[in-house]
Length: 232
Image (cartoon, rainbow, N blue to C red; front, side):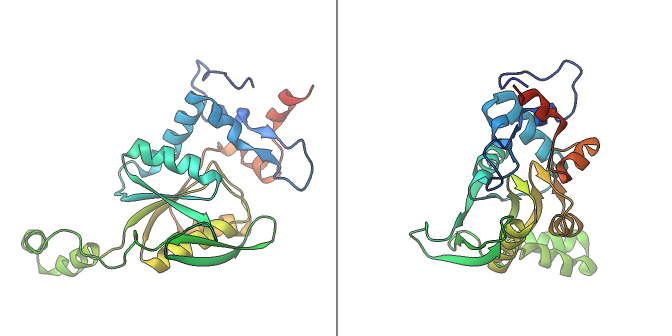
């Protein structure tokens, strides 16, 4: 598909998936390049809106994106929501105090990520004492304990990356943010492969991705039929 293509008139879901380009450089690289779709403004906008669909009615305080391609989608989603953006960095790049988490990514290599520690705080009350007393009177004493638990939840974070393959990177980011006190509202990525790690994330967290059911087997098989259009 031409990089400047517009959405088809029939409103086909996730039409922009066909913009993703195949690997032409060999096995040392990922099997495709999803970032080609970001060059098309309508494709990027439609992708962001599709990812946000399941979370439209959820309370979100902050969007976090994983280094590096998760920065593009994460920042776009944060801007759409009118929320701030937190970068989950590869270790060694932050010049401020941070928390770290080791993990193995899709290449099998052990790596470390880090997040600045002055943004996410655990157990901070939401609202003032008057507001919490008002909730107690309105909902009754049996619900007061639940209201109190809600009041001390951590920062509610939507976690974003470009792709979930083995799930190692995403799982490490979840562990890091939760250890710091965040409440993970959900996970969003262009695609989530049905690997053991990918299934674990989908089984344990609310997730969104852009892949129609009829294309999931192609994602898991690491080859899209749309790649034919890239052949010369």
